[in-house]
Image 1: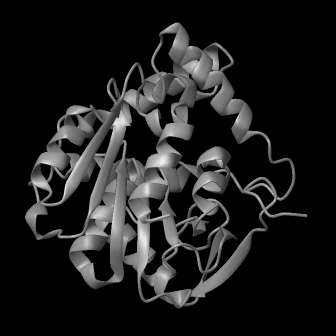
Image 2: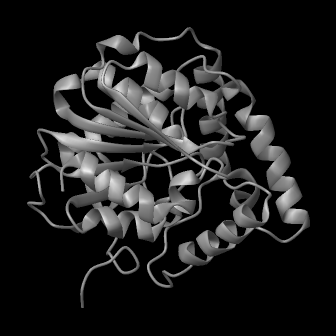
Length: 281
């Protein structure tokens, strides 16, 4: 049986005495010999990655998704700062024995990726920042309130909150949302644990802190960066993606039409094609 994200086994690795859960699939050598580490979104666990995106990139690269400290099946207490989350993510990469990796950081994961690049730039080759924004970015301090409001709305109408948070309310967006949720449910066995309330609270606090802190110097990030988002992101306003691309020395920007926070999932075929070209497949 070929390994896809639908059936990739969940493994664990010891990271300084704490077990982190992860999945790996794809070509071990790949086009570049450099694995892609995927950093997840707010309240996201292993099962929240779109299998079309992971499988698509895994066609040319080794791809590793993981639950950071205290999230899903990973042990420990979730920290309440982006800096501490970045420290844990770097420790996870080191625990797997890698000396250089590429990153795919989506939403909260993209914030974590930016700190990782500041902390250990030599560890990273190429980076995709999707649906995310810089420290102090417009509207990031309101992510918590928006998430809670849309979660209540979704529960009252028996929908997944990601349908409201990740997609536009146009007919195109609604249709893409339904297909996305269906893809997330393709895996029926060995599913991850849901994120705990304490971990959710810690992530909310971390994002609020990121949204209110002083902007960081992005000019020191010399690696090639692909910035991607929908053109109508309500969670992390799309202007933040434009700002990132403008402030990063070596960046390109892709904004998908009639798409929101989950633009890379709505346009997964186009995104995978661009990601493979960017990473070097």
